[in-house]
Length: 403
Image (cartoon, rainbow, N blue to C red; front, side, top):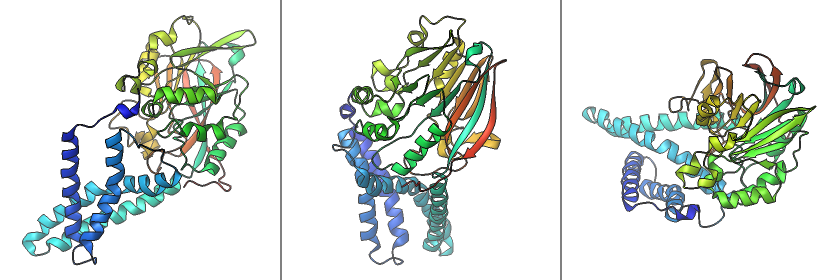
């Protein structure tokens, strides 16, 4: 399905217009008599930060390829502003109402809105530097059915890179060096390789197309590959030889006469977007696999794990949630936790294990707190089913940066 087929009903435009007019009117009222030409400035800011959304909705995606400068100077201000706007305007409106009986409507509204904007700005700055962190996170995965020949085999997982022309190449090379430094036997790329366009695959392949591992490099689709237009994305991925692309497919790995099966699922976004070929089909994915064999699944969305666990998949590696890009791992809570049953970290159901990685990049804005980007290194062990966390070690920054 082409994303260009997406169309927004007129009622949605009407609701968005009402929302933006209300929010920006509050901001304009608060700025009046404080900032010269307040109305003109607010109107210009409103148009500048709303234009990308209107353009995107009108064409079901940008009608041109958004290059690095567009994403940095247009798309990113859109995200920063829209994340602040509702609460800044809401708190300002509350201040206007609360302060009115005492004759301090404007000053109370300004204090509340300005305090929120200042706090959010500090949070964004801290989160920006948090997005520059990269760690190697080591796990031991004990699998009761693991053949002895695979004891000690390592899997390096990267996920949710969201690569586009705006992504720092120095940071991507840092990720590549981190993967190479652990010398994995298997490399697993668990979806959302690219940001939102088929052209982004070239930027991904320019760095990660060089990766290799003795037992294979395996790539699966994430929801962003679906949103970007799966037919075009698939063609780009296969033509650039970035690894074995698994979409509801299985790949048998042999080692010293023993076998382990790697399977890659489709993504639930395929069903939402009527892209049937990339929608998950667990039955087809596992068809023909021996019931007593060890199966390791790569599933971008961890919501697929229960179905995989029921069918005897020993270990599932997922991503997708980013841990909300804000988390408190010691308390097993993230910004994604209130919305998702499986939001972060390690899960176990009987002999079935799941690890949800926080991702190796970011989406929207460069922001991470408590959920550092990671290259996950999983060492397979033979024994009673268990995932053990061996901790993280920071990858030196050298000259890397996130723009």
